Length: 230
Image 1 (cartoon, rainbow, N blue to C red):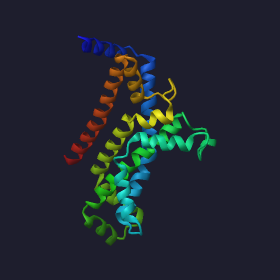
Image 2: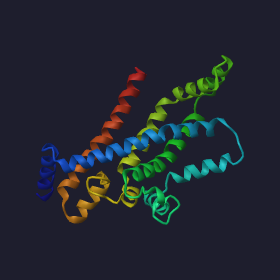
Image 3: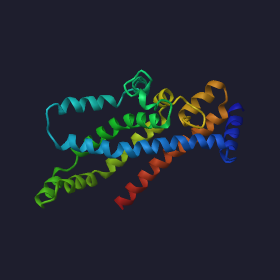
Image 4: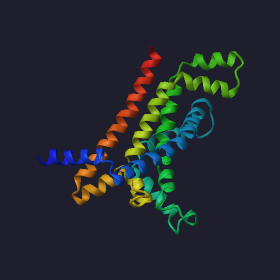
């Protein structure tokens, strides 16, 4: 009965246009979308370079990036906190406990996912696509675009995975954002806070929103993939 009552209260919060709840949702989505917009071109570009250019230290760099896939987000938050604190190397920027710091943290979390998945996709692509583009006299950017289009579904999966990782992470956002109401409180940190206070209704409501966002992103991916196959 308690679960049913908590769910009922959560649904009431969702459909009553609760300003606090939807403010948290807005902060979470805006921060994560901006972080993805910054990380996507950098991550895919680095993945393409690693897949197509040989240079000294390339293999150890790939191993390092793949290892960072499993790095705890709280460790990223700790390192970023030390850099942005008053005594840190970038303390004069006064970014700690701001949305900008959260965006930087989420970019750092998303980059290994985007680079590793892009690299894997490009390495498994049909090499004839690149050879054909070069034989037809395509420029470097045109060859890169051809290869990225060739592996577009794998890249979309990489984007979905990276977005799911950043929008649901709590450790980094809590450390560099500070969970300030109306400023840096996002969905995961709000769920953690409300649960610790024993207030489960808002936590369940925010959890429902997070699940809907995750399902929406993956449904969009499946729709585009299915449309292209047809």
